[in-house]
Length: 188
Image 1 (cartoon, rainbow, N blue to C red):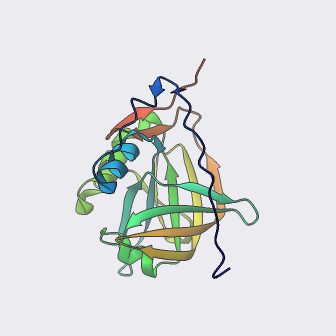
Image 2: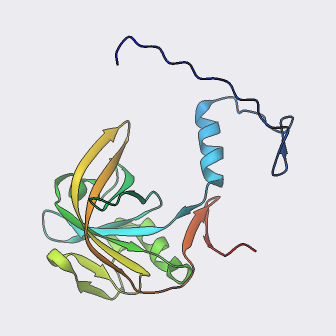
């Protein structure tokens, strides 16, 4: 509601959290530097998104921001730069394929994060639902229709509704953390 104030109570920082003490917490000089430092350490699952450009040629990219959004209806989100080579296809497209990746798929993550003109080179590509490019070997697949696009700053959040999907491999998930790819492992 407009004009209503909300107070947030300060909660004291525990003196010890998994090896960090209040004396070891030192904020950076800028919000940008703090943002980068924290998110470099934040592990995220890795996927690739594929679709077709308005011209019909395939396009795709590596995404480390895929997240489930709702179950009813089944929706997910991912974020991307509006300056990315695939943004024109996302901004005008209707459907796409999300390929979740396992640790065995590191090569796919690196290839789809590289040069846009070489992302599909040498890969086993099949025609998926809606004629979308399906990259063989991913650990899971989700066919989705784009339902919302929210642009903020130099990026966009894309909301998709899942139309179908399935798991192709039980291998450990591929995770991106501290500017490198890693395998998710069980604890304990």
